[in-house]
Amino acid sequence: MSYALTPPETVSVPVRGTDQCFPVRNIYCVGRNYWAHRAEMGVTDRDPPFYFTKTRDAIVYCPAGETVDLPYPPMTANYHHEIELVVAIGTEGANIAEENAENHVFGYAIGLDMTRRDLQSLAKEKGRPWDNGKSFAAAGPMGAIVPASECGHIASGRIWLSVNGETRQDGQMDEMIFNVQETIADLSRFHTLLPGDLIFTGTPAGVGAVSPGDVITGGADGVGELSVRVTST
Ligand code: MN
Image 1 (spheres, rainbow, N blue to C red):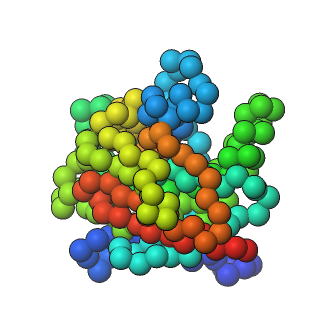
Image 2 (image 1 turned 90 degrees about the vertical axis):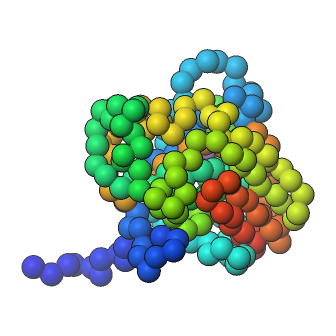
């Protein structure tokens, strides 16, 4: 049996310090996982974090030390940066216990949950899905995956982002509402986590808009940095 169309290429991200790539499967994102960001989005409830997804065409690999072009997406006038720790799942699991969660982690990376905030806000107002605001081509630039065997399990440390050299986001990863273990445990109640899955773990306060020509640089302790330049389309 042959394919009716050419199958899409496997989306993958290099594994730092190796000649291997990590093949990407599903991309989950945690919403409102830092109190200060939740407040800046105007939310005062105490509800637990929740999830949305991006498609694989969100992934743009950003090699360390390079500034990668990131096209300004269509249908927005309010394109926002969100710097996030990304967890890469290596081992399948459902209903994972918190104390066992780290055994399912392959590694960690730095990533951007790029957001068409105007479309997301409209969706919220209308009670519609967030997909147009969150899931689009190049909406998830990320650096290489650092194996947990190299960086250990990331539970704390600084996470930051600057635009044109000016610091916009400067948080601490131990300020997550659901830490990595709790996120894996909770998410795996809803979805069987599979090898290749990525989890964007939410952003600290300080999100904001970028324009063509802006250079975004961000990083987190233990997983390195990334840099992108927003280009006009
Ligand atoms: Mn986010």
